[in-house]
Amino acid sequence: MRKIQLPGTQLNVSQICLGAAQFGLHTDQDSSFRLMDTFVESGGNFIDTAHCYADWAPGELSRSEKMIGHWIKARKNRSDIVLATKGGIDFRSETGICLSESELDKDIEESLGFLQTDYIDLYWLHRDERTRPVDQIVKCLNKHIKAGHIHHAGCSNWLPDRIIEASDYARANGLQPFIASQLEWSLARMFKPENPFDHGLPFMDQEALAFHRSTHLTAIAFSAQARGFFSTLDTRGEDGLSPLLREHLLNDRNRETYKRLKKLSAETGCGITALCLSYINSQTDFVAVPIIFTSAHDHLLDCLTGADTHLTHEQVSYLEHDSATST
Image 1 (cartoon, rainbow, N blue to C red):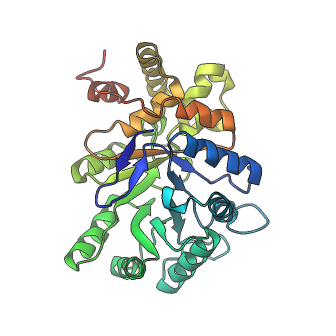
Image 2 (cartoon, one colour; image 1 turned 60 degrees about the horizontal axis):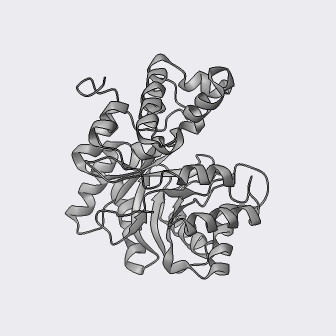
């Protein structure tokens, strides 16, 4: 699998990232280990988790981080993995968002222990606390960068104005800015922005896409396959879509996008799932990496079939319904 250097870093990551939200919840240890083993054997090295993953279900906390930590210890492969995790959320707290220095200190310390590592390659702030001044957040993250606990910091689910504010403060004070933004991004979601899965959370709409293209800020995309919308449409038709997918994503624009995906699939020999991922990592104005969340080994293999597929600028524009290039 082709590797991409994340701008502003020495991190060379696989052009597909393996998301671990299901590890320890819908995926037991044997299945989780198998998924990670297959991903690495296929050339993948970029794994994304979060301190709170699986905490929404009763039982042990931080199960995903702990599962990855057990796997890293068993495989003795820490130096081969680019490891990303997120902090700053506690589902048990009143507000849910916890970005004070003491709360971030605690999250980072616990994540290091659960992941059984001395450092985190990329540490995400899982949400923004817009009432908290960005200087407090940036200074706290840089404290941990200086200590070697984390190597780089990014933001997840932040709006462009706050990203700019934080980056401007960091650069003005000789500190490391965010090197990437993680947000919901798929072809289907871009074309039905009025009905989000998660109210209040940003996603890659046309405005956000213009922001990334103008600033060249790296984007890491979750829900890159739109929760299987196009692949389900392809194999089972509209009647096979779940009520959730029908409500949130089914419209004429996405029907047209599906037709374009089918046309490109016939031209390239690449499946629908792989094309949805390739659309993300074929951006030319900024580096972009899709995250795949899966608990099924067959689904992982399907995603990896198109790991090295690269779309041309014209093909990307065609999927975006660019009138200058669409046919």
